[in-house]
Amino acid sequence: MNDRPLLLGILTITTVLLAWLFAPFAKPISVAVLLVYALWPIIRVVERGLSHLCRRWNRCQPFTPLIAASATTLILALLFFGPLAYLAISLLGSIANADLPAFWATFKGWLASPPTLPPYLSSFEEGYQAFIQTLYIWTPNPEQLQRVAVAVGSILGDAAVSLGEMVMILVFFFFFAWYAKPLSAYLQALIPLSPIYQTRLAMEVMRTLSVVFMTLLGVMIAQGVAFGLFLYFYGGGYNPLLLGLLTGFSSIVPIVGTALVWVPVALQELIRGHTGGALVIALYSYIMLAVIIDNFVKLLLLNSINRWVGGRERINEFLIFFGIVAGLATFGFWGFVLGPGIVALFVATTRLYMTKES
Image (cartoon, rainbow, N blue to C red; front, side, top):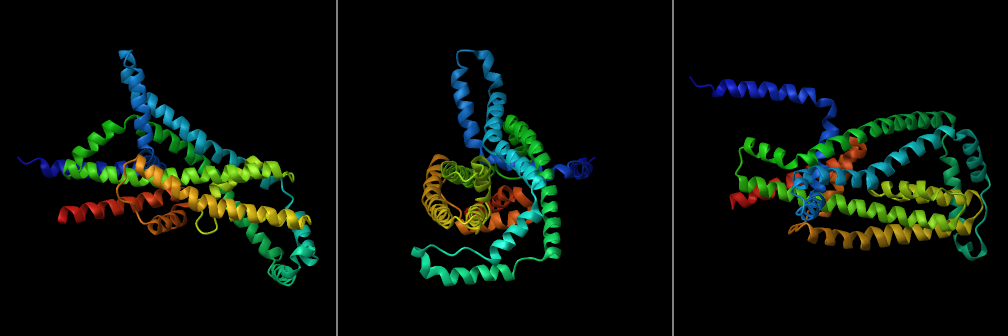
């Protein structure tokens, strides 16, 4: 009697049931898996360091994967999830305590009678006044402002959900990093693909994700620290830690990026009548964040990380850009991980297919 069809039927049914069971955790599991791939070079470095330390104590060797997973999870929490949670909680508290009608009235009053530019900028006075008048004309009315408030409330609700997702992602990341090798061996036995091609596919995805995620993380840290330190020395009553974190996380938003933070800060200085301060903030932010870090530092990080993980071929930056855009639009905040991950898997698969065909 041929039991194979029956076994395949049972396997299909149980797979569907398993997918239905874990459907609410699909996004956290996907993000955690991609983060394990992205940070696998770091996990391997930690494991090798621990193995070297444990040579004198044989009892320590079996716990190397557990300690490496714990250390990497702690690093990820301290560098990424901890600041993100602090940022979300701080923003929720700031918006809840903000007197939005009073701020809006002040802003409208400033637009109605804006200060003039200093004499050394008199050549820009006409364009400056025209721009302010355009802002005044397009300023939302109370009904439109109410709709904006509803949208902000929806965003805050999503932020609260994201905080819960962060905890789940960290939990899944820890277990996937701990049992990475047994899980990989189990899945390799199930996938009907040559072990050589499975290894090449996994390494290609790992290298691409490592380069993309570590570069993004490095740029986030650099831009957040640069703007936070600037505000610390500039003063003005700003919270350098909060705005520095906000700058770092806004850097993943395509096109506008850190302008989401430094433009409102510069406008705040204009409203206060500090035209020179607004100009200093705008010039420093554009030159340091948009030019130096977003181009030169990013390129340096990209090349250094690519050499470290042993990447031979790089994915076109436009594909990564559109992957992040599509990921953010489809999956929300975690799309900056899921989008490039899907693109990396597609590119690695097509490269492997073309190599196999040739």
